[in-house]
Amino acid sequence: MMSRSNLLLCALVFVATAAVHVADAFAPIQTSRAINHQVFRSSATENEEITTQIPRIPTYNKRATIEGPSIDSKPDYSSISGPMGGFVDSILMSLFRYKLSQRLYHQDNTIPTPDSKLPLTDFMGIIDLATRMNSQNFNRTTIQTMSQDVMVSLFPSFILDRYPTWFAQPFPAFSARMCAWATVVGGTWLMGECEVNDVPEIEGGGKSQGVLVKRCRFLEESQCASICVNSCKIPTQNFFNENMGLPLTMTPDYETGECQFAFGKLPTFEEERLAKDTPCLMRCPSNGGMRSWHNGNDQQATDSKSEHWLEDLKALGELEEFKNGELNVSSCSLMED
Image 1: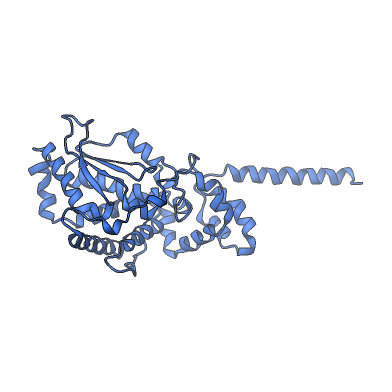
Image 2: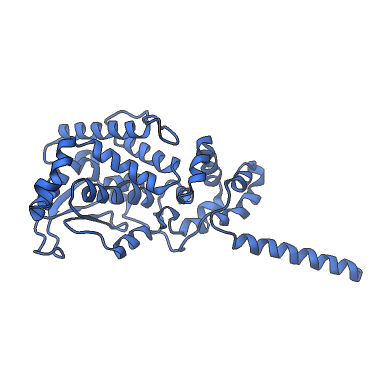
């Protein structure tokens, strides 16, 4: 039978152990990468230790994942072309891919990213670049700025210099309709089937000032709400508002894959909050893992030069507990203000 002193010692050890676990559970969300790297460098035989540390990665606003549209009803995007035909679409796709690769390989980037090895006319090459852009940059504002830079580079400077004062400001409704039409003509290859529609909530009825994307190709192939919001929605809205002088609100529906453009309408705070608060998609290729690396921490961006992020993502992705655990149902830290 244990002596009273041994019982007291065991009790103290138990209390101390419990205190450590409670402290870890309520540890600050932005833990140092030094601690995280020490955990993630563990070998495959130490998965149990890694698993106990995973809850320390940001788990904001836990909610159920979104299933998204059925994969069985996925359109054959290769058979969908814009009003000007498949040949023009292929030229636009190649131009976009070239401009995107140029921006990502810029020497001022934290990690210059070479172009995808996929053919220039392969849409998945763009998804490859967009995924790497989101994986290698910890600051979501950097991702949004880089994406907006790509859009700016697609237009001659004389158009961007004059459009706000020549069209957007004196003729806002006409400009909104023109941009809606141009979006369908020049963006079908990127978004899939889409059509110009009315936006009744806009003053004056918003006739032909909207574009309805029926099932977005970019979202379908990336399967990541973070990439959608930070590489498409926010930078596109910023581009039209800041560079074209025309307000734009984009409203993606992650359940159906639809996206509604409303030219001439500024996004409200509530609309932006709802977009940022969307949970992970069930088919997210990183199982929500990419989201935990985007917290806007400049020091982490500096540390990312070592490219340890890639090893970390791989380590996390190999854990069954991570794939099926709490991180799979958390809202995205990349979308937090």
